[in-house]
Image (cartoon, rainbow, N blue to C red; front, side, top):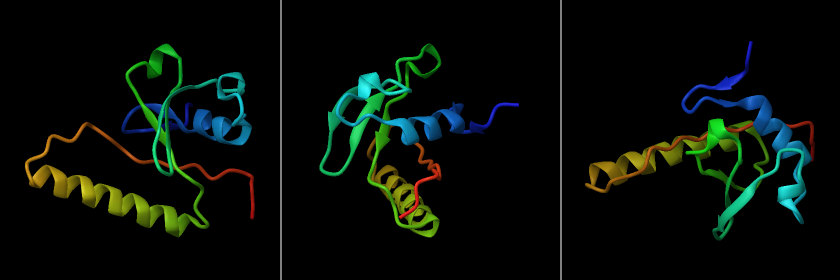
Length: 105
């Protein structure tokens, strides 16, 4: 059985593998190769060049210190998008997920 992020059908296992094996200097050479689409102040937007993810742009933000911290961020992310929609802005379909890796700090 596949472990899936339900909203967009992205395998959580793939995201975990990406996080644990990212080559920041040459992301296209990582175990899960990516193509950078752009950079923000604290984030990177990229695509995973696999057919099943061809219409998804991923956004990677810095690591959080705890699960509680990332869950609060996701809650605020959804609330912000709701406010934008209620204000009449057309917001692209989006979601927020996280993976816990074996890295501790």
